[in-house]
Each structure stands twice: as C-alpha cells, then as structure tokens.
Image (cartoon, rainbow, N blue to C red):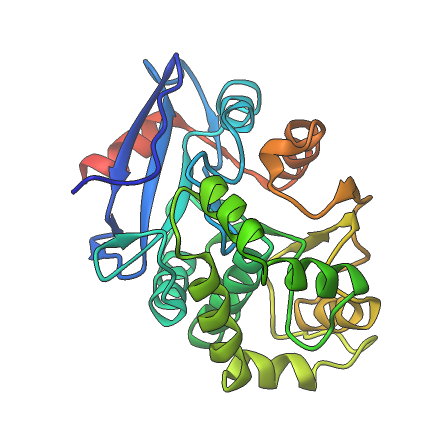
Length: 289
C-alpha cells in the first residue's frame, strides 16, 4: 500500500508498522523511527506520538523533534501514529483509533512515553482511560496531553478558528496543509462520536479538586498561549487524569508542533523526566523471544 505520510531523515531508519504486539491495527498505521546502527549502550523509553485531526502529510511533530528524541534524549524508538480507515490514509474513524490506542496503552515492553496533540490528545486520553478500566496499572511511562479539546468548553479563539473553516478558501489551505481532504469529515465525525460517548460522561462527571484516584498513569498537560480549551474544561481534565497544573504554555496560537521553535526543548524535557533507562541487551533478548 502507498502510505501518505513518510519520513526520510539522514542517520535515521524508518519503517511502517500495521501491527502492535502481534495484533493488527484497525484505525492507525505507524512510522517507527530508530537511530541507524542503534545505540552502543543503554537507551531510554520509546516515544509514541498521536496527531490532531488534521494529521498533516509532513507530520504533526517535525523532523527536528524526531532527531532530538533519538539523538539527544537517547530514546530507543519514536512511533508516529497516522489515521487510516477503509484503506484511506488521513481518514479518522474514532472508534477504531480508540480500539488501537487502548490496546497500545495496555501492551508495551518497554513502556512508552505517550504524547497527543489537540484532537489526538483527546483520543489518547480516552484510550488511556479505557485501558485503565481493564487494567489498573498500565505499562505507560508517562503521557503528555498538548492542547486537548473536549466539546462544550470552547474559547473564543476556538469559535473563531472553527468558523474560518467554513470558507472554501480556508478549506483549500487546510487540504494543502494536510495533504488530504478528510479534515472536515474527521472533525464532524469526532464531534458526533463524543456526544454519545462514555468519555463525555466521564468528563462531565469529573469534579475539580476531586482527583481521580483510580487513574495511575503520570499525566501532564500543556497548552498554547492562545488555545481552544476553556479554564473550566482544563480544571475538569486535571481531575479526570489526576494531574497537576499545566506546564508553561507554548507561545502563540494553537498549531502543529513543527511550527514551534521551543518544541524540541519542551517535549524533550518531559520525555527525559518520565522515560526509563533500558539495557539494550535486554531489549534485544525480548524481541528475539
């Protein structure tokens, strides 16, 4: 199959994956990137990246960040998730994606640091919650939700940005940026799914200052200075995921991390905080077994 998203970075080997832990993925395909020649000694936890609903063809996170995580942070691998449904790359089927993310969150060895952006942060959060209902202690080193959005807790910036998407000129720009024409359908389907989902029930039931003691994965949140999610929504999210105050915001408007100059440093700092050292020989033995 011809995949829409590609990586060709000097000094880094990349390959496509359509399975995780022996099970076929239903709503995602992955690009696994590793350092050419491997590492001479120990490595840190791999990193798993989930894009927003635009799922742009150049990747949401940027080549510089991939290089930084592998070369500077020493992560054993970076997995970039991309949407695929009915054989179409870029098309988001939220039920299938959540099924995949629940499975991925439940079966990791070594444990990943997981990061989601925008709608991908919502999907990652939902996958973690669903997995934690089946398995209280998940093998996830830590999760960073960047600019998550839950319907009904809009900022003025969100309403403005959403309205702009209604114009034909804006849709043409979004299509060029994404490399596919699935964005309006992805947004509509995601919002419709949320209205009848268990995630909405859990989110509405969350009470600020009453942390969810049953959720054990270390989670942090980070936003842009001008973002899509209201303060009331952020407070409920902190309770739902049992996490503390948000990190210092990224500068400027809500956008893809490849456009953020400080992304390498900020994301790398989070990864180093939660990643674990893994002996390379042990990883090799597990893969052979």
